[in-house]
Amino acid sequence: MKKFIVNIFIIIFIFSIFLFTVEEQNVEKVVTEKQVFQEETYSDITNPDDIVINNPEKQYPKEDIENTYKGYSVCAKLEIPVISLETNILTEYSEEALKISPTKFWGVNANKIGNFCVVGHNFINDNMFHDLKKLEIGDNLFIIDNEIGRVEYEIFEIYKVLPEDVSPLDAVTVGQREVTLITCTSDSKERIIVKAKEKIMEDSKC
Image 1 (spheres, helix red, strand yellow):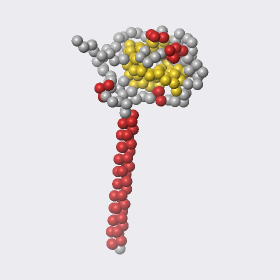
Image 2 (cartoon, one colour):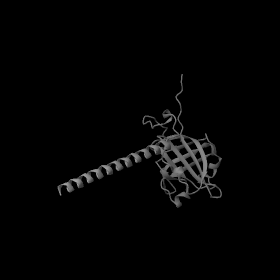
Image 3 (cartoon, one colour):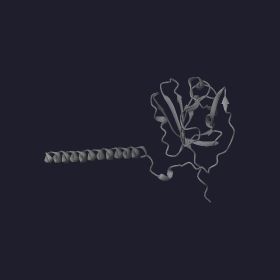
Image 4 (cartoon, helix red, strand yellow):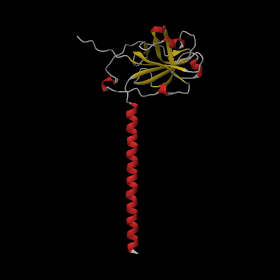
């Protein structure tokens, strides 16, 4: 009887070691997969010095913007000089608000580190996104808010996606301020995406 009990304990002990080994392998697999995902996500970053981290000591030009527009709360103002666009960005997205002015659609607040996504109709109005299709890479735009101030951005990517493609809303910006402007094509079958990142002025060297 004692021999039988001892054998049972030995079997349980061996089985426990087996389960622990399998669990440890699973943990290692999860960690490895996570590392691979991170490497793939940041594979386009070839030079760590290119990563722009928010500098709390940097001062941006201040100017007051109106807090409301036609009864809607305003979070920021958008200026794109090359297409003579000056428009308010409404704080809360809704179909009714979108008929009044472009609105924040997703992401961080205006001029914060991250992806600030703004959507606007392709209406032929002075304050809408009809002329976004005229923009080119390298053009500049400005986002002005009452907290941080006036921040200049440079367009680095322009492309079209299907309506169900949400990849332009990706929040990964690697420590940079980014703006994503979204509007419809004339036939409404696709979305025009304009992406811009904060323009960093290099210090002049003597």
